[in-house]
Amino acid sequence: MMGQIYQAYQLPGSAEACYLNAVKLVGERFRSVYLLARVIEAQGRIEEAVARYESALALEPNNVPSLV
Image (cartoon, rainbow, N blue to C red; front, side, top):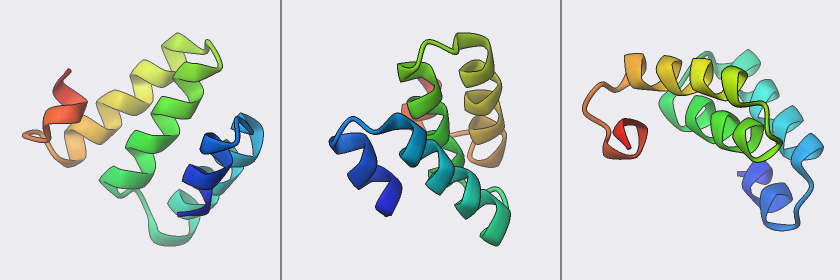
């Protein structure tokens, strides 16, 4: 996923744009929503990240990374 490459190169704005685009194109899927939450959290936007983590958890309630 291109967003992960941007994250690895510490380009959070580009990573966020990729994840938002993925959500827009394929709908809310756990992976895209979870990774979007991580990049938002890394930018210090905690409340927004929590909302995204909760969305990811709603999609896959038993997914361990979203429970931590």
